[in-house]
Length: 189
Ligand SMILES: [Zn+2]
Picture (cartoon, rainbow, N blue to C red):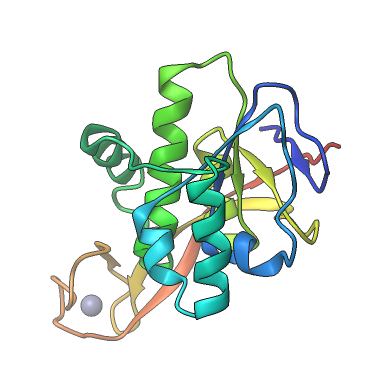
């Protein structure tokens, strides 16, 4: 699997960029991508709690520099369904998931347009790459490999579904995460 990850001042012309809370908060000055469309989600806005950053993003919204949208429910269902059985989603926040769903939706609507997920957090990067999306980071730190996790019961080693609160085999509530699949990521740019 290949992936383009970038720490750049410019993106390919016409690219679409969906920003996560971590990316926004890492940057003091939001980069200017004149030829790109910037997006974020209502869930990301909710995560931005401090007044100065709220004002900062308000300016971007009112000047039309960034659009706040949500991905379609059917896309969310697909994304969640794709990772059914993997416990990766336990590590994602609602905002993380909303960013991934919007990015996947934009990608589905115009497959020829590159869609970037701008995020510093490795777990959202992980799922973004597994979804065929590209990465943009403020600091340039991106994942070297993707990982899928499953949960195992500590007592009997049974595989436990991500939404189960106790083991269906022995009733234990102690689980651990194990990597079920790794794939190297080739970074370029
Ligand atoms: Zn068990």
